[in-house]
Amino acid sequence: MTYVVDFADVSTVGLESSPVAQALAGLRANEARYFKNKYDHVFTVEPADDAAATIAWVHRILKEERDLVMGSPPLEATEFEVDGIRMAYVFYENGLSINVMYTLDDGGKRAVGFKLSDGMEIPDELASTFKFARQKSKLAGTIRGSYFVIKNAY
Image (cartoon, rainbow, N blue to C red):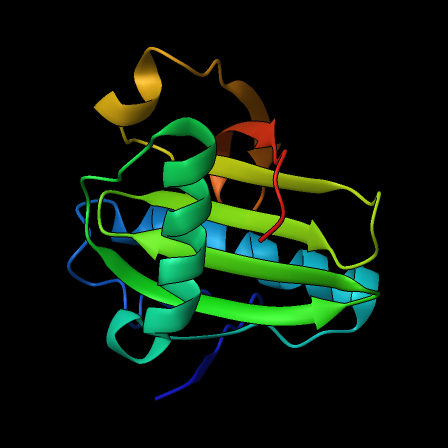
């Protein structure tokens, strides 16, 4: 079942099994607010079981680009296109959010972003490879983020 993420009234719907559910819900709401304000896009997510193709695409990029395999199970995901950019998000039980920004035109920006929910530790898979910068968010508290540029075509 698809869920429209409300950034005015933050809810943990779909994220209840996460030990940092409230912070992850704030992180998800922060993304929803960004896409509504910048692109007038309504941010929706669906349970991981219903978003298998999106999750497989994100996991393929992680594996082929950086030999990364996430240890935490995905809870929700979404995929959409705005302004010629294919976007995909996967929200994990441990509080991690991974997004893929993939410009459809050749030569455009293509990157994978990692965001850590407030209160979670850096996952072992990412700890030795990535440095995380901090940013403040009214919805999500302190968000720590990092990214890498995608080199191949997907």
